[in-house]
Image 1 (tube, helix red, strand yellow):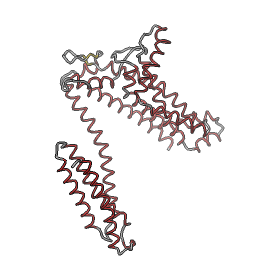
Image 2 (cartoon, one colour; image 1 turned 90 degrees about the vertical axis):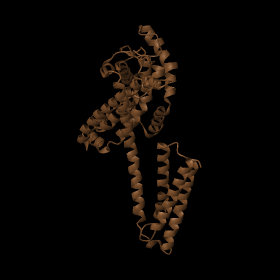
Image 3 (tube, rainbow, N blue to C red; image 1 turned 90 degrees about the horizontal axis):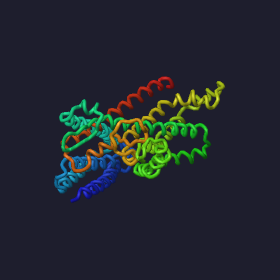
Image 4 (cartoon, rainbow, N blue to C red; image 1 turned 180 degrees about the vertical axis):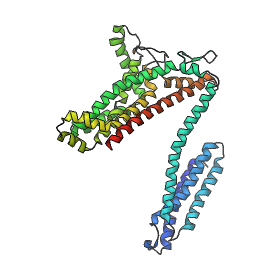
Length: 396
């Protein structure tokens, strides 16, 4: 029996168990639900959860860790667990049974499980990167990786895997993107929250947020076809700075446009959350509208604004498609924004795709690069947390 059918049968048994157990509880109370400790629905939910949760959990674990197991065996075990759960719920059903407490305990356990999955997933990602990074450094010098200025992987031997050109390209492109997105997004948020009429706000905010829903491949095509040639023809070539449409500036500008809604939408929500009493107090003391925004509203909203900027920075650091199509794949260190460069994420993809030897340092370097990105992002979070705590103490 296919596993999908087994899951549907388990859910059907859970539904049946709900109504059967609920009806049994009412019958034991002689139709007077006031004699029951809990409402009748809790007795039904107790049976449904005991039937569905263990069966579905065991099925998922079994299929994940032992995918070669016979589907028939999995189906038999799952159905046995579902029927056993219903039978156990029926045996416990009585007017004095604390069904509500039992259901709440099961739901609490499920919530803890969901929280644990998120934590364990993060730990698994970090551990996998650490182990594979350790394998990489056992084959390649860590000093050459962290301080090398040449990126030239060769699977036949003689590779130079210095990450500084990739790190420079990542930070350079991300910086340009933030220079574009943070002022525009923050000023848009200030206007929408403090100056715009409700009618204009109801139209402008959704239009800005549309930018967040555009696929990154579309932004990449926009960078490749429109922005890149425009910068080359009107700026790079006339100034003698380059003749390629793929450049740091191309990727940075397009990425900055993509990040505008991340900054504006979150900043707008944070600014609107500032208590109106702070504005009224500043205006009552004689401050102008602009002075109130600069000296009261923005400092009070600064922790949230820092969070929005951090989200935009993390998004910029992890972007791939726009960089591939807009900035090229050249690993170099330079200050000319009209030259082609690349980022860490692009090289992670390139090193892990294709028919490659997974045990080779040229492939394992992708995990070292990923761990580097993780450390950078962690550093951004620590800095943001420091700023948030510092200013939160002043306004709570």
